[in-house]
Length: 200
Image (cartoon, rainbow, N blue to C red; front, top):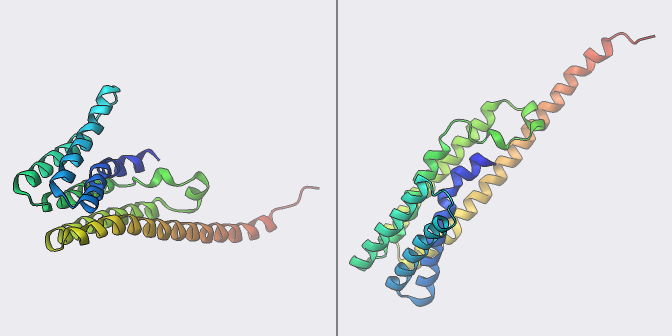
């Protein structure tokens, strides 16, 4: 599970400031207030880790920098699109992390790995990276062309729904292929077992 958390961690950590921005924008209709609180939430998250003497990795610092830069640009220009585009950068970073060959291999249980070649999980790892890049592109398009309300609905629904759907497809496909391969292996082993001499 370590590699999955590594790939998804920047997205999960960035989610706090994005959710704060979306929620406050929807409730208060005050983009400047929402941006200020979102920036404070992003900074507080890193400050909390530093206070607890936890390691803050480079991607987390980059995420904080994005919150500060995009939030600052939003406050100066009064244009929420800077904050709205920020998730696209994070999704690109996560997608790049997921391009690491074989990052999904540790998720396969030993029984599953006996019946599936590594190439299957390596391919699915690239499919997950592609989803991150598609999400980044769609977010950028919606952020730059649609209203804050439309973007808020998009960011609240599409990223989570697409990941749940792809997880289901990945799981069912990998499971079905492993079961097929296990049955073929058992069928191939059966004639060999029948030919073995029985001890008297």
